[in-house]
Length: 355
Image (cartoon, rainbow, N blue to C red; front, side, top):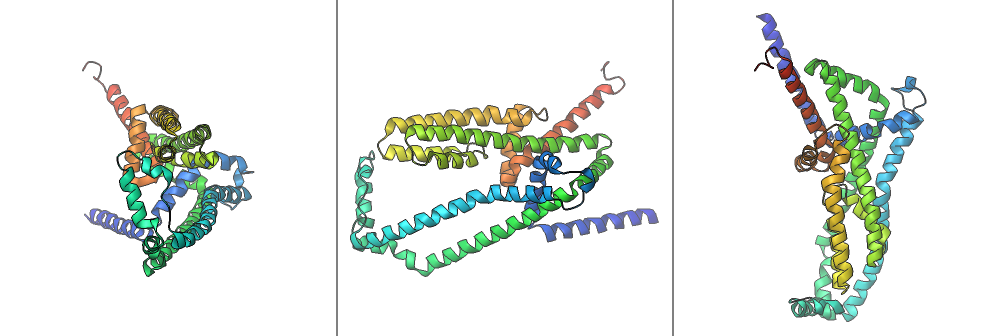
């Protein structure tokens, strides 16, 4: 009887401590998950940079260099976009100053829009066509609301940047102690699932690595191919548009937002054949990569069927956002491993063949 009370008390204490720890770390759990996913996907590269296995548990130049390299790869597009935004904001400010003096004439293509052209042109003239209308429309830029929005944007940027620094610190910690952490996870899996628990852990890691590699390969390939498509269609800055498309291609079917917008721009400029060709080219490429190539690259690593890979990607994204793109297939890979082991155990039971 005392043993039962002691066991229950210990269970309650552990549950309370786990709940308290989750509550304390709730704001950092996504960063922890991202760091683990990044470390698992880049672990072979870290092992290559590690001079000796005896250095596990210590801060090495390889871990620091790889962490900084990952940070640079993520931050470079952000900084480049901010610099481009600053350049464009100066031109935009000059444009607004001229607009307040002479107004903004409607573009020539606006009147050619089917069914809505005349109405759209009239609305443009009433809103921006005269200096008085332009001043009234653009007045909100000097209000306290715009200033508050700017402060909120700056606060969000600072918060995201600090979160990113925390992510890099966690990533460096995972690189440093990854070997011991992996052994602890495998030991816990063996205690819960038995000897097959180690295989489940390896399947999860393989699924995460395969998902990241599949996403990256699809993103890079799609960005390059769409960059060629933008150049052929006559779009300006095709390399930037291709890189942006490749980034959005990490999310299934999200790349169509980029080439769809480019097709609308071409259509508005009366380049109808180029617009139709670019949109059709992008849709075919999206259909092939997101429905066949991506699931094959991801599912082939862990013998996960096409449909389960696809459901893991979409279901994980719906449940956990962008992080679910990588964790969804990993979870289904473990579940399928458990399912196969259960079926094998059922077949090996005495009397199963006669039944």
